[in-house]
Length: 139
Image (tube, rainbow, N blue to C red):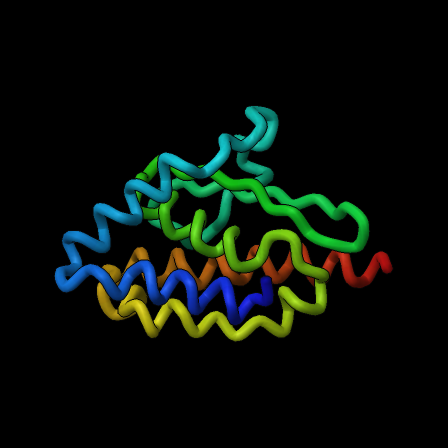
């Protein structure tokens, strides 16, 4: 699936909910499905600066594609990073750098986050793109 197809799928999934409380519940459900990050990556070296809660993100390159793992100590944030991983993991560095993450606005996520969580969302995206840039420079 392309990044657009995955994002459209996410938009469809969120469209069944009328209330933001239901969407938050869905984010919580997604957080439970996120595979655990390796314990050695739950350190300050992998923590994202700018997030209110603690979020750890790691990435590895396999066969020219980036695979992300992440965790958070906040369940809503963990659900948000699960969505970002779903869209960006398994992509080439260039695909990650070029991705227009339109699903964030289309599902109403950005407008329904507190300012500190919105800053955290930007920081998560920035860190994932920094990994892509680093991997791209090694190619």
